[in-house]
Image (cartoon, rainbow, N blue to C red; front, side, top):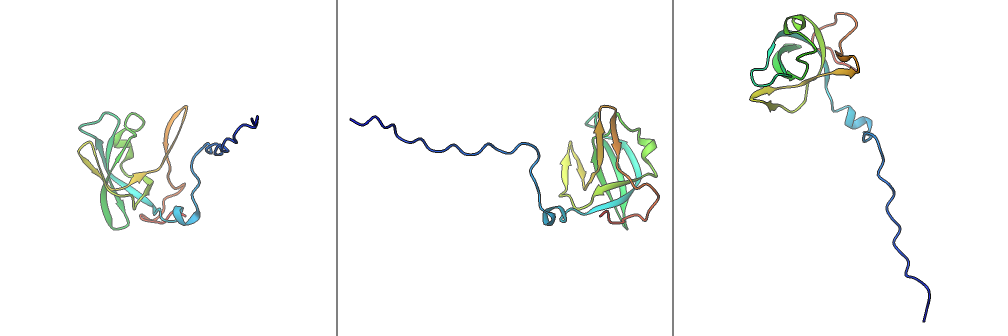
Length: 126
């Protein structure tokens, strides 16, 4: 009778922690552009969302942004922001969103990413 125990399979390595890494080609698919905010209003069906009418180059479109409570609608009109311009359209609480603004958040709240000087509407962010 053998006292050897059968070999157990080697367990897989632990899954990496943190966000998934992307290569440059994947990142380069994002079209980041400077947009002008033309209008801003509260979303009628969500208390954390604002509807922004923006202009990117010659194109006007609407985006839905989760910044209500951090920014007043009137204060956004006339500002420049940075948006993901080629995000697939989405229906968010009954309103179409055709892009996404970029913002950062910390323990003091949410801040919009924007150029540090006025720049041409539609300028590419690199």
